[in-house]
Image (cartoon, rainbow, N blue to C red; front, top):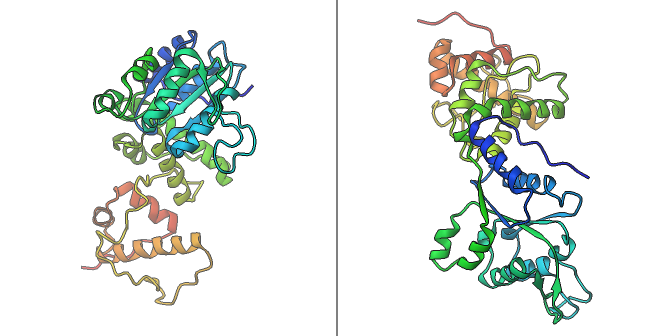
Amino acid sequence: MRQPESIIGNSAALTDALEQVSQLAQINRPILVLGERGTGKELAAERLHYLSPRWDAPLLKVNCAAMAESLLDSELFGHEPGAFTGATRVHQGRFERADGGTLFLDELGTMSLRLQEKLLRLVEYGEFERLGGQQTRRVDVRVVAATNVDLRIEGEAGKFRQDLLDRLSFDVVHLPPLRYRREDIVELAQHFAVQMSAELGWDIFPGFTDSAVQSLEKYAWPGNVRELKNTVERSLFRWNDQNAPIDLIVTDPFASPFEETGLSDDLSTTEDTQEPQRITGFNEHMQQLEKSLLLRALEQHAHNQRRTAETLGLSYDQLRGLVRKHGITSRKRRA
């Protein structure tokens, strides 16, 4: 039986939430997990299941926002032959297949009112009918639902059934966003960096510089742990040097290096040779662009690295790391 993925961190906010999950795992009640995107709601649902007496029964997951209403109806409750065009045989829904176990309903707030009514009956009595069927069926399934919207406000607006919300919220687990568990950021970043280093074929993860650590700790992380993981992996990939600590944290892949520098868009030649660059692949081309940008910016500021770093929006240490990375030698400053 597969064990849940580890939830990394030792902050007080995370520890309290995980302790609540561990306690709730022992009782057979519906649970609602609330949290911003990327906070680990699915991991919390896995922890609830695998720590519960249902651990050896199925754990199934459905993203309610990923399906149209009719398809979600069939996926959750199943259908009979002739229920709709193309339905030629019996289809068991997720509730039937999860009998005895747990069903995780992610993005619950997107479910239609009609399906909410069917879900309420199942949660309340364990009963349902397949789409297009007449026979009432019974299952024993623990429902764990998750959302990043305020269902109380949705209920007041008539977009979510209050009786269903009451039934699902025996207790509510609030997962803390990353900005409230900053002491976990570096530990998480190192964990993701070690994984990415192995994927890149590096012998060892060379670590982060102090400047990079400060960048990680100061950033707001609106996308939480998921955004942190993507950022760390992107930063290692772009750094592309296993022998030097990572010094440049790339939080915004859409940011253009040309917007603030006033440099020419014509980077078809290098500063040293003024000969056309030979482009053989994406990675090599990006390395050439990065080096050419650095050379032009350094030349504009007479190779004063501090002024160059300010122009490019980098720290002094980050610029020095890039200069070492590309083997750019210092030149005599011009008056």
